[in-house]
Length: 324
Image (cartoon, rainbow, N blue to C red; front, side, top):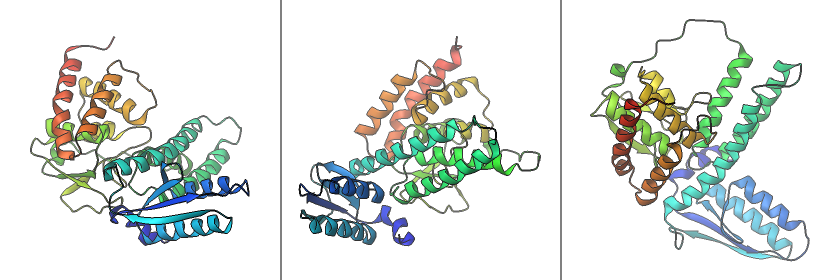
């Protein structure tokens, strides 16, 4: 694959669609086409209609596949569109995000299960799994055109596993930045924010820097300026670590030792990672509210403004009550 063009796909205008009809024979062609569509990262809009972000690589992949279909007696066409009929761009991006999140989730479960190796050669098992997982992660990341949230979870688990394999010499932990050191920063994250990023933004505004500014970007490999802090994004300064979501990491980095905030972190963790680690009674309701805000509001700044009163109320509830 051409890495340079893959990296620019998120910013490429428009979409490519492949519409095709397969012949009845050979029978294996349907499976072959489906596997190839999965490998190149295409998502289905409807039966036999698949889409990719417009790019030279996407056109090449679809052309190759269409050639195979036509050689086997089928037919089809490739179309380039600015807008897909009946769908907003953010809705199409969400389809790609859901597809890649499913891939990342499968890999994350394998990595979590590996925390308790069953064989005698624990180190050997871990190293072998790490090699397989890194390869699979690279394959998913190659077709993760819009930076799915699940990527951060897997990166954290891989980093944790690599640390176990490396067995670094013991050293004093670096001093975590306190809230004061995080003031005056521009906070940068991926656009189309959801629960973890929304909660982080609320936490920053409420407890770190009331005048904090936020910047939402499309680039997966965004390079920050000296005055910027990236959160909940690829290579971010504050992002997933191990099985911790970005909100949990931000609490630690800002030195916010508050039981009410820790309770909110448990809610955010379970919604974001979907691993039912804490199972608080408030989680389902908060998840529905966040989903409703995101469905009705595409502007990221507005999502923060609409969700902040909810987090204010949740904080007051946890501050005045004690979990039984």
